Length: 183
Image (cartoon, rainbow, N blue to C red; front, side, top):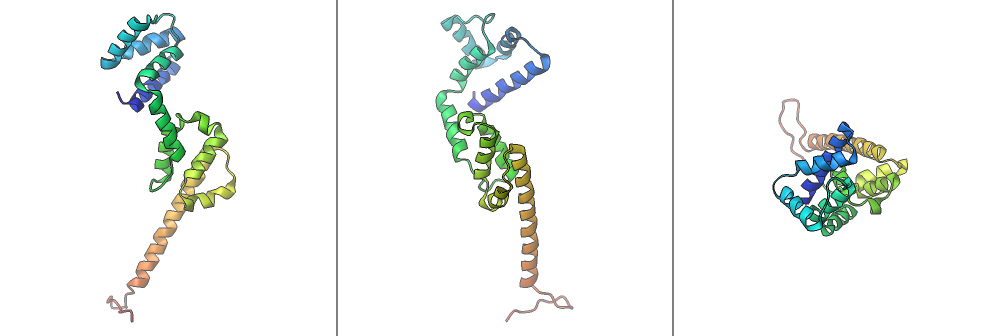
């Protein structure tokens, strides 16, 4: 199983628990019931090897065992490094935001609180966007994303207008519709 898929699966299980308002015992029973294929085999071996008792196990204990098997420390550390190096590059702000949020959950100790998360996001923005957003002194993530999206949109509109004007200057048309030569 792909570690990121395993992580997403467990997050989906936790969302179900919130909707159903399960107690801890029900959560563990439900998550074990949902295991299939290799994951079910892993759990059977885990129970026999470590004499895991589902009736007394906390969901956090299950998650620790699950992560140790499907999301090893080396993979989590790799994801931490990825977010520390993450930059927008050629991605749109929306794509960058999605990648940032995907990786942010692995780097809580590096990012810290809302201000740290916002600062890291800002530092990874393309310079043309970052230089415009910095003076706003935004300390909340959603505000930073929203402002960055607006700036990106306006920069793109400006570029389209400039490109259009450049094309008109490069290929002037006479009243009869023929091109003038530029000498």
